[in-house]
Image (cartoon, rainbow, N blue to C red):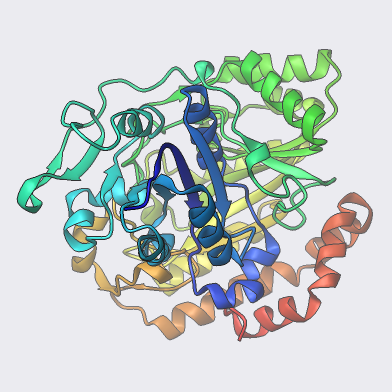
Amino acid sequence: MTFLNSKNILLVHPLGYRKEAAGKDISRIASIIPPIGLAGIAAYLEKRGIAASIIDCYARPDSDSLIRGYLESEKPAFLGFSCTTSTFLDGVRTAKLAKSILPDIKVIFGGAHVSALKERILKDFPVIDFTVIGEGEETLAELMENNGENISSVPGIIYREKEDEIRFTGRRSAGLDLDTLPFPSYEKLEGFPSAYKALLFSYPKAPSSSCITSRGCPYACSYCDRSVFGRSFRYNSAEYMYEHVSYLNERFGVKHITFYDDQFTFKRERIVDFTRMMISRGRKISFNCVARAEHIDYELLLMLKEAGCWMISLGIETGDENLLARHRQNANLSMLSEKIHLIKKAGIRTKGLFMIGLPGETEEGIRKSMEYLFSNPIDELNVAKFTPFPGSPIYEKIHEMGEFNEDWELMDCMNFLFIPEGMTKERLEELFKLFYRKHFMRPEILLGYMSMIWRSTDSWKRVMQNLPDFLKFAKSNKRLGN
């Protein structure tokens, strides 16, 4: 019997596609985002006296050999995965690999996918020993401190009891105070920050990183998974945010940060305080954020601009107001347009986040979305292919609304797996391509990208280095190269 180190865990960020195709994945070429959640968990575990290492399969497509080498040399007692729906099955594959090397290793899965599907995961995937439901830091630490035994009193765990009975210990009653958490262990991400790349043309200078300064969202859009944090909203203080940004800048030389909070400006006073600190203390670093139109105003936008805000992303979803009202609160496209113009007036770039293929979608609605895009000063565009994720309100009844092929590996918002009634996959694909083509062929957009030669020089370098792959994607609309 091999002795395993009960105070050691390997954390893995799995791929969402075939590992042999990773080198030609267009989304990976365009952007590699550090797994901040895993880095945060690693930092918390280290604080509790538990050794944690990270292998990020996105940054290292040769990860199988790295995982094998780590398991053979360090012999950790635990292997942890944080998974989305599209990465889950690759995590399962990797877990099977690990158990072939260390049969007694305990496999733990966390993340949105397993939090949404709960007991179903252990029932269908016997290679998994535990799942962590909801917020992971305390639960994982307590699970490891008990060596995976006598854990019935540890909330947030699904596990097997004798005779394969599956038991859920229930959710934790309260979330962590986020200001008590250490900064994520960025140093455990091999090659950080240069191994990671912000989305093309979304930053002025490299290297870049990302931050998450809040958890949860108070809204209940039909398409959003809230299985991890629910509808609560907790956030770091402005002082913690500023110290975090300073840490990334001073220790790692990071020059640009993308804040991936669902609702960055929801608590206006903390963002006001944060911008004041950035301005008064002379911290020269640019950043992007995601905001909801209801929670921005011109005074705040001017402060964000002076503090270094480069771009704000807004969830528009669709230009069909009747369709929008079916899926989110406050479906007011006129108000949204007004806020887009204010962002432009403040001198900040705007990114419009759209979605095609929502239940109730029509060709007329998609054309309304195009008209809305073209009538507003939107600089960047992202069009997602609607995907009904487990944990979203719409998931339970999605089969009543159209045709749904629930192929987890393809559930990455880059494939039309749900086809609304009255539409076809072929027509959705045609309109998707038309949406992007019309956007990028507009003179003002082309001029904007030409200006990036000096505004975001690093982005153009990356485009030229991978030009054949980008041209191939533009022609085929297929994410993975062959």
